[in-house]
Length: 254
Image (cartoon, rainbow, N blue to C red; front, side, top):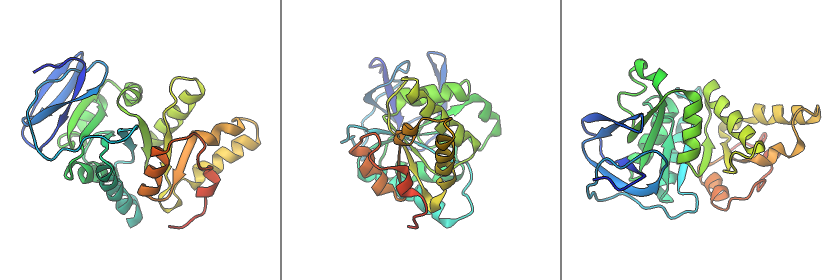
């Protein structure tokens, strides 16, 4: 039953159907439950009681995780994605991610979903013809018109952002979200899970651009950085801009 401008979270993997709400196509499983997290422009489709779902206990209950659609070269990337999914559940948080069923995105979403987290995947319509990216997305799937709309929806659905190792689309989202902070579009925390020192190059670029006066020196304060999921979530849940300088993440081995 409809309960106003609130989201619906898919709870079990089951045959799906499509529904269009306010111009957005959502793919829902047959077993769903509505939860009272307000999200603009999306109405609840159905409501059923289901056991085992966790309720958020954080001031930042909805964590948007961005990552690549491959597994990467090193086992540490795989382990970090699974560990992040588990940690999200342990802290009773909700997961939002880029949709699809490949690579690190698949691992983090499945690790969270099977342990009780509510999961929402936001995927651009252009990726729909790719089949495996969308046919078995974990949790609820929200289809948007393109990459820019996905980033906009990210702001509506998320309280904080975590970047795992990823591809060019991941980097695009990272740069866009950071630039929007400077434009005062949002003030939500942006964090880097610097697995295997993956983001050292990005941090080096920031330092280089700052030294050459192309980026203001306070840009590094926009990001929270850590090498493990639990450490990063600790920093997010005690959120303060610039809580940990990015330079502390460079070159560490954990």
